Amino acid sequence: MSEDRPPEGRREMITVTPGMRRLCASVLGMEAIVVGLITPVAINVQGVEPPVAVAVGIGLAVLCVLVIGMLKRPFAYIAGSVVQVLAIASGFLVPTMFFLGVIFAALWITAIFVARRVEGVTSR
Image (cartoon, rainbow, N blue to C red; front, top):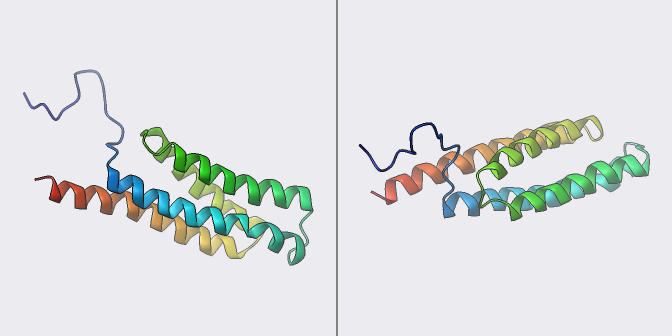
């Protein structure tokens, strides 16, 4: 019986590695800046009401920072994926965010898979 497998009846969701944490934290950190900056754009360019723009822009930026703090736990990667969906959905306020949200989602997915692959090769 292999020691790499979790015990019977228990499934391991995601194996968190230091490289994966670093890459995902970098993506979320840059994303926090970008989604925070959609607030003035939504207000001044798109004509969105300030309370809505602040709730979406700053709220999403704070959510990114909170998820960065939780990246040691596997559920944070699911929360980070939800953040990616919300970033794409913020395109309804600032249409450019449809494009930028997809880019950040691609970076998020790439960070997870590349880090796992690289650390899998180096641990052998």
